[in-house]
Amino acid sequence: MQRPFGHILHLTFSLARPWLRLGPGWAALAGVLSARPAEFSLSTILPVLSLWLLVDPILGTLWDLSVQQGLWRTMAKAELGQTSRQGFFLPYAQPGSLAGRLALLLRRYQVWWGKDYWPEYGRRFISFWLGSILALLMALFLAPTIFGLVLLTLVLIILAGLSSSELTASQGGRLESLVMFLLPWAMGSGLWFPLSPLNLALAICFWVTYLGGLRMLGNHHRAGWLFYLGQIAAIGLLLSLRLLPGAAIGSVLLVTQQIIKTKFNSPLDFLQKVQPYLVAAVLVAGFALGSR
Image: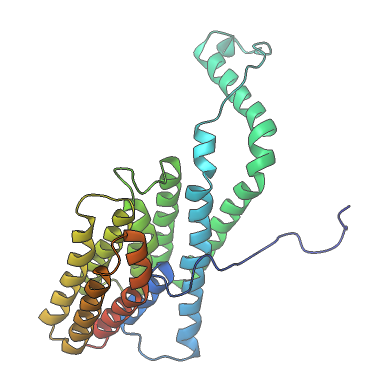
């Protein structure tokens, strides 16, 4: 029996994967570094920490609920049972009419919702919408630009949850790379200043790399080209801006990945091993751009 007093909500955080893995948290931090905040102090660290909480545990959990756990796919593929055709008293909702068929469909959904969906997915459904409200509130306090980007992210998360989550699908990895990398980088860049063309260009370079990595996991043709060309384009951008230390470190990290590739043929094994070098490449490039 539940006690009548106490807290009403549970909030649980757990480590989904090792911390040194390229994802939204590191992308947002690289975006912050690329925008070159005026100074690092308590007043700047707190917004960065809030942004990290927003893009990684909160939006990451919403992605997991929507895409991995199939919150919306289950709703879209509901197996509706039969229900009574009686009970339509309005003339425009008589059985057989368009409104009557719509009312019958809604009644079947209502029965399915109460018997099948809510007992199994009710908590996750509530968690998704409460998490969405929390994400929007945090974004609103951080910056108007971030609020708009979070709203776009939520729309993409729901769209991704309506389709197949398999990376082997023809569209595999595209929405995920936007939600997990490009948009978090843009949020970091827009935390204090408007997103500049150079910031966006560097973000797109590494977004191509991130997308290539996801497509490699899905065994897509020439996905490796995306993975390497994105990093080569980022190095070329740094060179064009005469940011030689950042370009040199990025080149060393890229060569290191090539050496690792000779020892691991499996995309999964290879991508697991190169994660620290990818994280370092993203942060170094962001810091180099922000220090110009």
